[in-house]
Each structure stands twice: as structure tokens, then as C-alpha cells.
Image 1: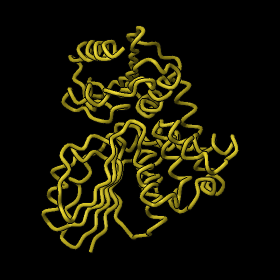
Image 2 (image 1 turned 180 degrees about the vertical axis):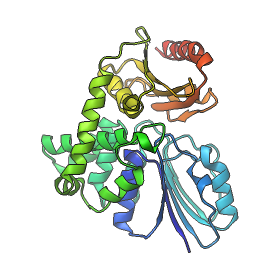
Image 3 (image 1 turned 90 degrees about the vertical axis):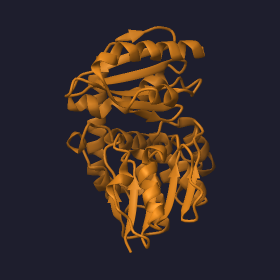
Length: 322
């Protein structure tokens, strides 16, 4: 029997699996990648006796792989908060899917485990830029302000590490980062014992965000702002967390961060206004390589000739919501 753990390479995916494997340790094969590498079920060919856990990747984008696994008799445990499409009714599938704007996979796993490793859930929730949800989850723990800030920073750094066009852009490969953090039942223990790894993430984040701070909007009005980042490693790494930072700074405005790609096209991160977290997935799915969730979504490969069209539709979409 083979055991596969398939997870998004961002904070939410890593923290969700860390909770599960602390609660139920298994010697598994890890399948992950950069944050935008989400068709991960296509990378395995499971058999009837195998066990597959899937965390924080869209069921809709993995439907062919899921159907193939279920047809082979594989047992699949699937937890996610992205657009799922039609969820199969199958005896071998356990699906915990919730696409609400204030929910992430780490929160869903925390509920499933009845709060066994809630500090990791808080970290993953902060990493997914669900600050209010993370604070609510943390309230019963009576953490100090500094402790809460430390969890928030770790979540942001874990999330930041997942962005890039390929693994060479990242400070840590997501499977390596998962192996580092999952040794610990508490993120505080990880930050204390693995200070060198934590500082590598922190320094990288601060350096890249300082570079992004010099970027001026390509387009901006009262409803939206769109920024274009260059085809450089720092820009690819920072695109997601920079989008979150912009959203947190101006909560009534939608933001798009477009990063130039080597092929001349654009990688896009969209954040709906935090005051009205809707529509990012709908907008992005209207483009060929788009997807995500209501509050945060993206387009993996926007053709250069569609740049003007994207900015126009982005502006119209969120101007009409106001």
C-alpha cells in the first residue's frame, strides 16, 4: 500500500498537513510544488489499496485525477476551500469542502481534529491572510500580543516561500519546508529550535518587500489598483504576500499584482477588497488559466495581448460592486 500526501506549497497547505501528521503520523510520499502548481493529482497513479490525502488544492482543477483515483478504488481524504465544482458522491471519498471567504484549509483541518494543534491552524490562517479568523481562533489561548505577532509573521513567511515560477525561485522547496516544521507540535518550538531557517525566511521576505515598495501602480482609481512587477526572482517570490499587504493597507479597494514572465505573459494575483471579499475567483476563472477563491485568486499565464483587457475587466468588475 502506498500513502500519498498531496498539498499546496503555501502556508495553508503546509500547516494543514502538519496538523494532520502530528495527529496521525504516516510514512507518506509528499506531492507538492510552488503555490500555483495545483494539478497535483495528475502526478500520481494510485492503486486500489492506496491512501491519498489532498489538502488546499481545487477539486475542480484536479477532477480528472480524483476520478481516476476513485475508479481505481483508492481511498481519498480531501480538504479544501477553493472552488470545487461538483463533488463526487463516492464511498471511497471523504470530502471536507467549504468555500466561505473567511475559511481556509488549516481551519477546516483544525475543526476535524477538534483543535489538537490549533497553533499551527492559527499560523496557516494568518498565512492565508485571514487575520480576523486567525485572531478569533487564537482568542481562547490567551496568547500575548508578541506571541500572536510571531505566529502571524511565521504564517506570512511560510506563505511567501511558496511563490515563484519554479522551485528555483524559492528559499526552501515546499516539501523540505514541511519536513522542517512538521517535526514540531507547536510553531513556537519550530521558531525556537530552527532559528536559522526562520531567519532565512524572514530576511528574504523583508528584502523582497523592500524592493516591492518602490513599485508604483500601473492603474489606480477609487475601486481598484493594479501593479506590474518585473520578471525577476524577487518579484515572483513576493507577488502573493505583496498582494496581501496591499489589501490589508486599503481594505475598500481591490488589488491586482501582475508579474512579468519569461514568455512575455503575466502571472496575476488578485485580492478582493477585505471589506467585501467576493468575486476574485469569478473574475480570474473568466480567463483561461485562472482560478482561486472569492477573496483571493489568480491567473497563471495571461497572454501579453490581454493585459489591457484584464485591467479593464478588473476595473469594471470591482467598480460595479461598489
